[in-house]
Length: 423
Image (cartoon, rainbow, N blue to C red):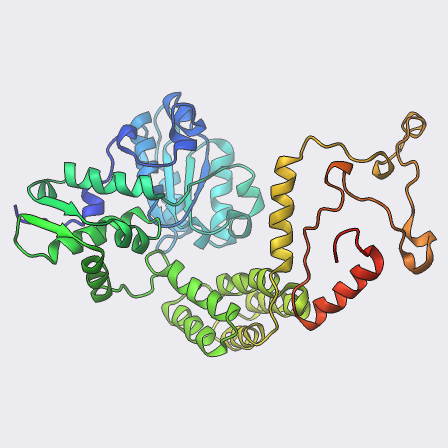
């Protein structure tokens, strides 16, 4: 059978909820979104997740399942005029679904134009975004929408997509396809279902007009390298390039950092996105080894918003080089990760009485706040006392890194706590 022009990922777009792969927490038998769809009580929502996890497909399925009108806009190419034209159309018994892809690219005035219609229930908004909506969606609109987080596909879901493609696509169905390994396909897809299916199609096409096809990791890697996509800020290599950029910063290579940054700038990436990722990196990978890194990164983010492109590229470059050449420490990152894990396992432990607040006389009578030592009443503004529940007393979450600033912190901790925490 001759291959049609439509990409495999599009040919296999699910037509009903039962064909939809993944997102079991939302769409499983007891999933909140499945219940809302079946009961036709779909709220306005933001679908937040990486590329290729089915945000557009899910919006289409919701419209189909509830028999509602469906309007589709892309935030890249539409504006307030397009919004008003759609909002002026008559609707049926239930408000129509207005799907806006990459809603994070709408500016404040465009988002404000949506606000009234959502508030009145004139439309049911479904916005799709790959960016954290807390940063990109204004608070008034966000407060009127339910945020659903869509997760990248895991190994099981990706293999389900491959099996479904081979079983259901007429072109693939006529071939006898075997796999010596799935590793390269799964790894190169990065949890992106669309990327996986399109790569599978390229791999099969690369074998020519044969019906017996064996797919190996070596063949997949070879085909992928021949078809590396240009950086695309709406998907594909978006996450690969930002990953290379952050790893260059972490690896103290200013040359790699400015190169990958330049790749993003040339492709038209939002400078605020780059600045925000540097702010995260300044805390996660530098932290107290150089606290000024956070100040620099935060100033960069503010300057980018004030100045804009193209001048902000100079500030981005300056701060990237500063971060890359700064001493590194992930001690704070590891500390909160370990503390969160401990908190999950010890959430039942009560707060020690001496640390509790005692706003009432009764609370004082039963021991709230008793024997608490107010640090400022003691020499050096320090009084040794327990700040953890007895059951986990002495648990150490923060381990200073091997750098000049955190070695100074270590000396202070040794002076204050001695062997209590093992410093």
